[in-house]
Image (cartoon, rainbow, N blue to C red):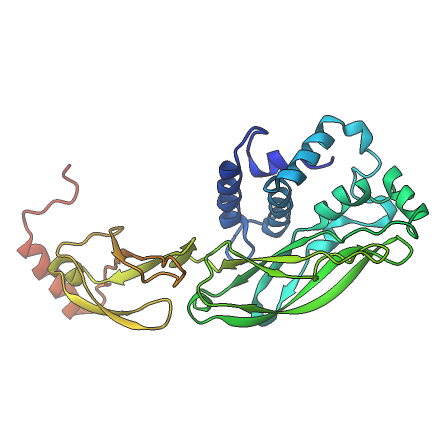
Length: 320
């Protein structure tokens, strides 16, 4: 195998399912093309998706471990270019309205269906395609959407390139555009199942299913973990010091009033219970306070700072 999925996720082979999931989420936050500044973000995200898709499924992981332990049996397909196919072509998808989707079923299809195209089992299937049918493999994709969709729901179009077999049992790429209805209340990481939209069946077999994992766009000011939403809230020094009441806009577009605690600090968190994603078990909205210091550009502003400095003459911020 040309890639080691364990190395891609930075974990050991004895990592638990929870450790695999945590490693994936950490790397996805770093390399997701919508937010990452890394030069190789798209390629790394594709690699991470394939690794997680394989290692998070017990059966896929079992077969992958077997392939790692018996590399001599998979050398023919190990370079990912057998039969003229370059696996990188299957991972470039575009979602409607600027949304982003990542197909992560290539390793599953070429690693499990017939033990790879061109392998002995594949040749056996070609010779016996009139006698035996196979269900198509399930496929997986990621769809990244705006956080407000968690509150209101939406319908999105996504275009995927899915590797499949034609009627002659030969590999080819099927391009399809699907309309996905995203209900309100989906947690980050939850999946939508589209029955029969996965890989086509072989020799009359039923088609597999397509599982779409919903992710939310993440920025330095707003991100989602499960059903919880974290939002940076900028406040002025006097609002922080005096504990004033302010109005702000929540991720679902509503305006709320909030009482800032007296002598609030940058980095301090305030929890608004059940104001996160409205799931069956509602998430919370965590406001992370950020005290913004206004500039002193005019004489009036500079005079105000001088007056402030005199009022706090005994204050030394460098004292431990």
